[in-house]
Image (cartoon, rainbow over the protein chains, first blue to last red):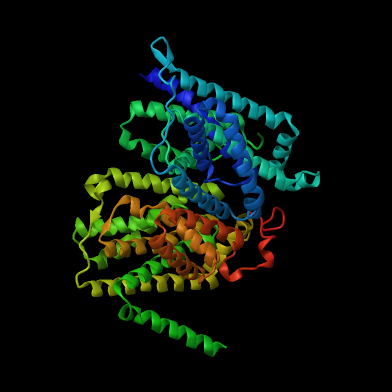
Length: 286
Length: 317
């Protein structure tokens, strides 16, 4: 029972990691807590759902398409809107992204109705058993893709010119501007990358979670917990934070009665904030 | 000029005093609701606008005030006049306790830490069924009298809350305590170097904000005579308060009044006509308010629309 919970926690925690990486990237580079991050995940899930039901495109194959759509959507939002207020006090960007979140929720409500949606894959019941622990094929695939995307993102941040420019802007945006980095474009790329990761996470959760237009709001509080656990400024930290949350959730359902789980979650959040606000592995560089 | 202003203000006060006798119960309740949001936003303005700490969990005090009132009136059978100050005291105590833990955090960390504290508190209220009625909520003995008497009483009760809070904020705008808050907002390190005990003043600021928020929560509980956790710990209300402060002008005395009138009137018009689009329209209002008037509607500057807060040109966070 516990062993199965640990395996499930690690498999699903990888998706949490992807969610946390995008969220903490935007927070670390631009000092924006993006309350619409959960909404981007939700859009990704809805797109993948529509591509599957209308065009019979497998959610694993639609990931690049979903990522591209969210990349361009978020690039526009950042470049034309958020860049105007990005240097404002923290509550300004918080309020802005909250407005964006409820706007997206309303659009999704009109497009996809309030019913819960989820993708039923023909191979969803297949899996393998190792020593009494069941590893479902779909969840294993999700884990593989999430780890792959995370590794690609890590390499992008370290090896490419754009990634290095993002890091430079995060460390000192005036310095970056002085050496010729177009800060507004870099901010837009950062936000777009974060949304693309969220979209991929959305496409990945569509086969295993039911979503409705208000899922976005609850996902963003998870993103926040992951980012806090992992600490800002570290890809590996966010992945560790994600897997930690996955484990806490799956083991929590086995050990604690369901009534107190939410309470525990918020208490842990407040405690981590008070005792270790820099997170488990926080630093200033991605 | 001054004479004209006095004339206008006394005309406004006269109108406010007469409203319950001139319009129907629906409008009296709507104006009472506007007063409530103006009062809550003014109270939030003390910690968020003056001191610069975005307390996203401020509804924790509203809920605490409402529940203190409800529990004292139903379980201990105390009259409202006793439960009301008790709600304020409880809010101050909680603000001191939470503040000494959370006010060490800054920026987003404080904003979301206070939100986490509110959610945890709400879960406790949910689970402590014996005392709070849990998710079922509590029904409170309602104010005796005909609907007209009830509407009029709560109209004046909320009006009194607004006057009290705005008066307190107008004093803060000019006195030493308020200057200390503003110094912390401008630069906390510098304020500390100047000899301001920043931790102490931040806790005082949050306690004041909590006191007023808790008192409004107390009046709300008596007014609606039914409360449950999702209503009194509603995050949307905090967001509404922030939007009200934003529209009216951050850290100004009368801004929250202006913002509450605008947002609640628009919101009421939208609610009744486009229920399907309510969230979307509210979201659009929020986005436009943040983009085009980050300093409030009174500072709306068309030339500034393009350059406001562009990277490197605006204010630092």
